[in-house]
Length: 54
Image (tube, rainbow, N blue to C red; front, side, top):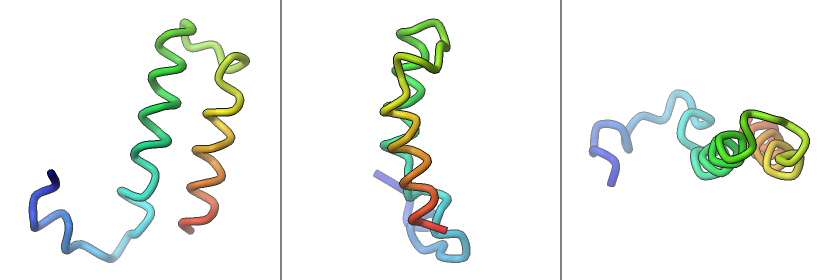
């Protein structure tokens, strides 16, 4: 669970918005020796999330 101080910070909404997508993308990279190709869908989901959050 996030600390209350972190939850109350609203200046940068993108900061914690796409943590799940980023975690999935990082896990995919790690499993695939940091090769983008097998993780294209995960990468796209992360960038889509960031684009929506901005």
